[in-house]
Length: 322
Image 1 (tube, rainbow, N blue to C red):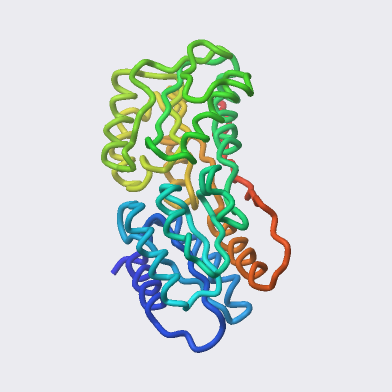
Image 2: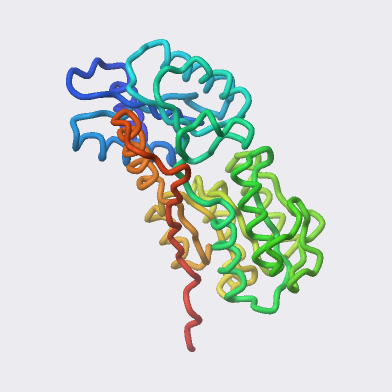
């Protein structure tokens, strides 16, 4: 059995067991099988155990579903097991309806409510998504200071990801007021080819197909993904990218990918120059701070409206002299 399956089994057992000591806090994820949300749970549980408390990971098991997430929230509220809950919001209006009857403190992590429903959350913990996009873009500017063509990859209908794309475009263009959803057409020397922006559909297989088309047909100077879809299966990624290794060693194109936890396989791919730069969100830290927020809420301590975590930047390796 794989390490990931063992971890999921442990979380499942914990979620359905009766815990005699300490309080329980609910983490409502977009998907309980997503490695990033497992990492949030690990951080939350590590912090909670210091007080003999526990965090329980709840939500849809596989693909993101606002309806299933709402059901998990309603079940958590009706169970009266939890002292507080934190939610990574899928669809704001749907989740707002689900928490309307909550009598416990509610906060958000990773993905907040939309502005019109923000009053339902006491506090938000997560990355500053626009800054995350800027950090990605700065890796491109470091290698191509005069601009070039850039192919972007995202997943549609996700507010977090839209903010990352906006941050990239604003950073590359040099215009902090660039209009949302406006592709680059020469601003700051940067151009987006007509076939980009790519929609990964939250699918590794689709993301790999799109990156192959980018490298064989579009041939941008930079390929930049705001999420880790291409790297979900590192071996499959390596198989797709190996035929392009000679050019990739010359950073043609430069490949930059936003990820959660940086896995050992990612370092190996970077050493092979099949990926050049990574920007990582610290989901473990998000979990720690989310537990602290929930604990402070039940202890009636003041909460900050927003707590941003720092990103980890792994830049391209320097050129090697012959």
